Image 1 (cartoon, helix red, strand yellow):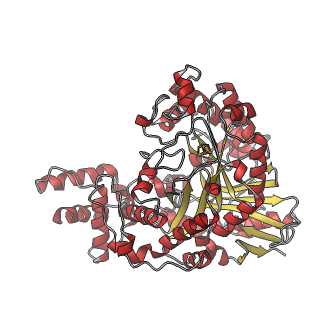
Image 2 (cartoon, rainbow, N blue to C red):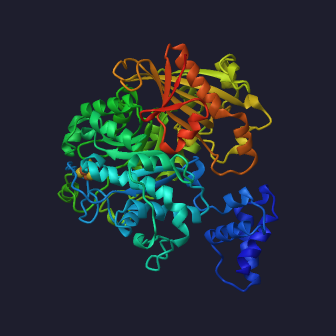
Image 3 (cartoon, protein in one colour):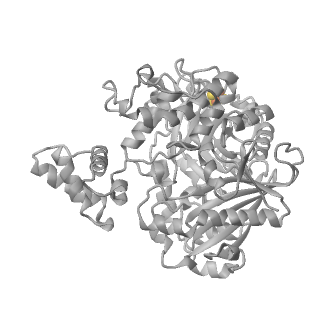
Length: 605
Ligand code: SF4
C-alpha cells in the first residue's frame, strides 16, 4: 500500500535523534491526511512494510527506525525475549486456600489471563504455543534469536515423566522448525483483535527430532535459540532425582512459591509445606547452580503488614534463602476459593492499595539487595475475576513515582546499601581495556561517593539496568565504568555478583559466580569446581548502532568471565563451570569451555 510505503520513506530520511515517537505520530498524521484516510496505521503494519522494503532493497536497514516501530520494546530491552507456555490441566497436590480452580485450566490459572487464553486457544500444545508467540513477536519487530522459555504451572513435577519430557522436547522442536513453516502460519479470523493465532499442525510438514538430545543439538545452531529455560514447582517436589531430570531437559532457572517464611501462615493457608522444606529445596537447587526466582504473597490469611515485611527481611538475610529474583503476588480474593468463603464470613480482610504500597515501599527501601531482580509487583489477574482486593493496575508506576519523589532523601541510604552494606563485601576497580589489569586498579570508596547521586527507586537489578539509557555510558570516557564485585554468603558458600556499572550505578553486564564449599560428590565434574550461575547483558537487543558497537567493542562479557575465572583460580578452584542454556553453548565454546554432562566446563590450572 502506497500510504505505508510513503510513511516509511519519510521516516528513513530522519537521523537517529529525530526518530522519536512525536515525529512518528506527526508523519503518520500528515500522510494519512494526504490520502484522506481517517485511521492512523499501526506500528505493526509499518514494521511489516519496513521489512518488505528492506528485503526488496528499496531502503537500507535502519536499526533505529526498526526499534522505533517495535511494539512493547521493553520485552527485549533486557537482551532476551521471554516466551511463556502453559502445560495442560492436571491435578495439583496442593490445596492452597487462595488458589482458583477452573476445570479447563491448570489449577490456579484463570482462562482470561493473557497467556492462559493463548494456551487454551492452542489446546495447551507446546508447538502451537511457541509458533504463536514467535510469529507475534517477529511481527512486532522483535529479534527472537535469544529466547527465555518459561514453562508455566506451579507444580511441573506433578506431571508424569513422559509428559514432561515430551513437552520440553517439543519446545525445542518448535524453535528449530519455526523458520521453515512461518510463511504458512496466519492470523485467525476468529480472534483478529487479540492478534492470536490458531494453527493446524496437520497442514504443516514439520520434521520433529527423534529425541530430546537431538532437538537440543539442533537448537544449539538454530535461528531461534533457547538460552534460558524456566520451570515452576512446589518446594516439596524438589528432590535430587527431579533436579537432575531438569538439568537433562536443559532447565536453568526455577520459579518456586515460598509465599511466607512463617510456618503458622503457611499452615493457615494450607500450603502443606514448611519454611524448612523451602530451605532444603533451595539448598539443593543451588547445589546444581540453577537461578532461583521466589514468589512471595503479602497479606495471606493470618498474616499482617509487620509479619509480611519481616518475611522479606528474613528472605534476604537467611543464607538458605537469598533468591536471585523475586515476584510479589499480593493476595487477592477470587471466587471458588476457600479464601473467598472466609472473606464472605468476615474472617479475612482484603488488602487495600495503600497497604500494599506501604509494604512494597518498605521492602524496596530497606531489604532488596543490589544482586536481586524484582520481576513483578502484582499478578496479572483481570480485574473482573477479583472478588475483593485493590484492583489497581499501575502499582509499579504509583510506587516508583512516590519513591522518585524521595530519591534525594534516599541518597545516603542507597549509597551505603550499594557499596558498604554489612551483608556483603564490596570491592571496586577502574575499568581497563586490558583485562589482565582489571583487578589491579582499586577505586577508593570516597571517590565513588563524590560522584554518586541516587537515580533509583530501588537497588534491584531491574531498576538499575541500563536499558536504553545509553547516554549514561559516556562513550568518550572509559573511566565512567567501574568493575564492582559484591561478595555474600549463601548456604552453599561464597557468592560473587560481579558487574560493570556506570559511575551512576547503571548495570551494563553482570555475572554470578558461586564458590561452593564442599562438593566431593560431583561425580561428573570432580572436586574443586567453581560455578557460574548467570552471565547477563542489558540493553543490547535494541541494536541501535553506536552504543551497541561501543559495548561490543569493549568485550565486557569476556572481561567478566576473565574476572570470574581469576577469582576462582585465586581461591584454589581447579575448574570453572557454567550453567548454560542449550542455545548459548557455542558462546562459551569460543572461550575454551566444553560440554561435560549438562554444563560448560573449563580447566583453570
Ligand atoms: S500449589 Fe499452586 S497450583 Fe497447587 S493449589 Fe497451591 S497455589 Fe494452587
